[in-house]
Image (cartoon, rainbow, N blue to C red; front, side, top):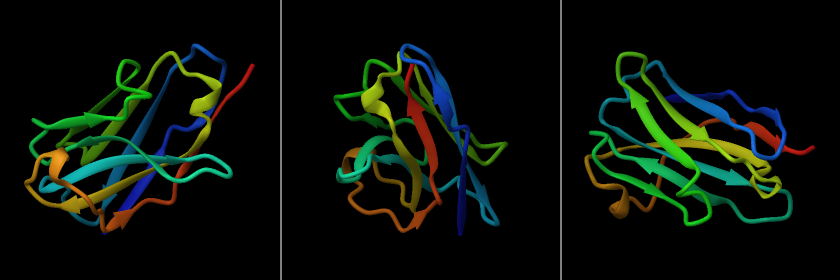
Amino acid sequence: VQLVESGGGLVKPGGSLRLSCTASGFSADYYAIGWFRQAPGKEREEVACINASGASKKFADSVKDRFAISRDYAKNTAYLEMHNLKPEDTAVYYCAGVRTSSSCYRIYEYDAWGQGTQVTVSS
């Protein structure tokens, strides 16, 4: 089970990025996907989740009006679209997966993690 993130980079405040999380070697159709971030000196924070069916989504309060999460089953990929980015969004972003049909509000642990992609928001 391998998850690979891409799409990070340097963006100015107010800008947008789209992160991708592609499952390699397995079908992610039955997996919930979560996005997490960790800034230097801070604890890892769950940013967003989309469940296996796509019907359940969850966002952290700090991003819920700016970020969107989606998935493309044909591409075996989940996306995190980030808009109106702020310097405080700067972090390494990770995607994670767990095989479950639960809603995002009942997922407490993920068992597959990607390597992370750096997002830097700076002028």
